[in-house]
Image 1 (cartoon, helix red, strand yellow):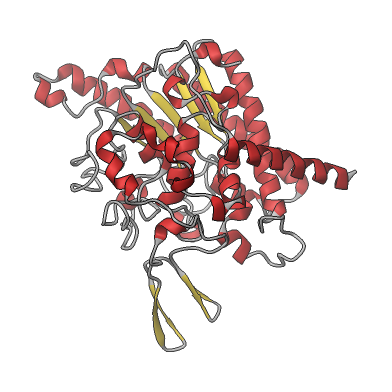
Image 2: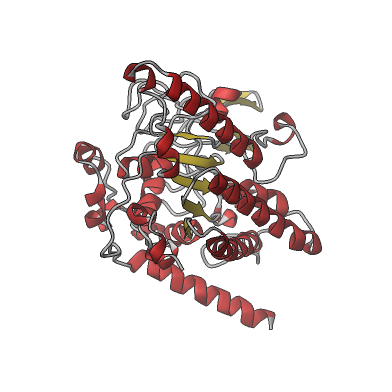
Length: 424
């Protein structure tokens, strides 16, 4: 029975990967674009645009080297998926709520902190559940989901008050319009760190743990709805077992890897979380009558790239870059891939020398020799940036499929995600 279930799982994943790689998506017809005036994002390091870096220790070079040419609080060599989403919606890159100065004054369309078009409450290392250890003990952010939601509540109340009491347009220019909170896109991309923590739990503990995660995330969506949010873009979690750091530290990976070299057990836990999250989204659609909720299968997009790394790259998908704004085209034309991606589990930044791990951008003394963990020569040819996070090139690959609706249920593209009629 177990072998049959595993065979069915592999078959289903294969079908899904083939669809993600081969689909030629099209917009849902008959519906106008939503023209979201703002984005409010909640999550972890996959979408943190400077919050954790501002609150604790700033990131160091070579983080940010590819696009920003400086460390700007993003766990990548360049842009994250949320940055490409902002570009697609013709909005500035999101300012981190915790960053009072702004991550970069030189690149993109941001010049210091500007909350007119939204805010980012995500922080690296964040979890859905409240952590039971400090950041310095576990590396887990104190800004878990409930705190991010509390930050949003405070942000909405204070900016609305400031906007209404402002005496001029100049004073309001960097504040969100009060009416835009109900028209904005609300993105939730969180859960990977919870899944990591849950891997060590016993089966019976995990059976209670995953529903707790999903219920907590559902409660956050319900709270935002009560605050006026209507359009939700909810990411599931990625294939944790495919991360180089997961494979590297697996106690005995032999016999536990799938055909792509990923840890079957870890990915199985992630898929169970995703299954229950999708069921929760369906329930939320019934419970929240005015909400438009899109479930986005990030797992499918990431696994598809990892499973077919050598054949993927922008030169294979030239038509998919048409959504890029005209002034960005030159950037993409100069970053085309010629030979696809380096196959996982290779990473671009960070070293392991004589059993000692030197993290990306750090230095360490290994057997009397100073080792500097610099980045690779060509980050755009790698999927993994530092063993945990993705490169800008990989984030761009994911974002194209997300934006066009290739991995959202009912094939809902982002531009039409405010329309409830196409959500079932």
